[in-house]
Length: 187
Image 1: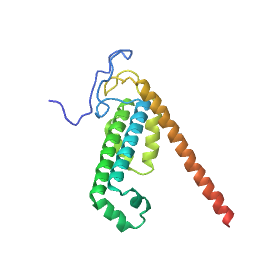
Image 2: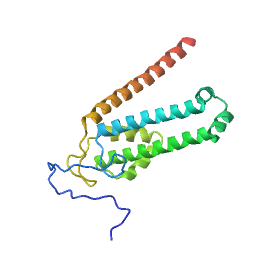
Image 3: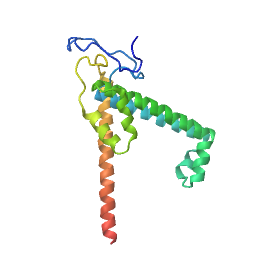
Image 4: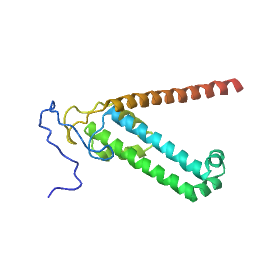
């Protein structure tokens, strides 16, 4: 009987040029994701979450009140309502799928999925996330199975996601610089 807590194993002594391909569902924590697949599926997930959240808020008519709410009591009342509970469920589902995608990416670089707990530690999560995103996956099979072929649509969405990330970082840096310059002018 094998240990149910041991990481998944595969035959790592097989030919790396083997055409064997990971065919597991993208929503399964077993299997591997390339960098582009990881970015593409996270982009799809984020778009789907935004659409579902917008639909929920449009149907319930809470979007305008939530966007302008600054009182903590209003926020608590919102998350205590049926709409707020639906949003919490949506956020938790999004978190679960994000972790699954992260575990699959870790498997691609031949790391155990338990390393994903590092994403809950501030500052460490940024450094570790960049490492996982930049690190090239193992070619051929590794301890977590054969490599997964990246379809063209995942490559395209992965590139789009990467462009969005770079633009986001540039906007943040520009905002920081603008606030420093504006702060210097006020003195």
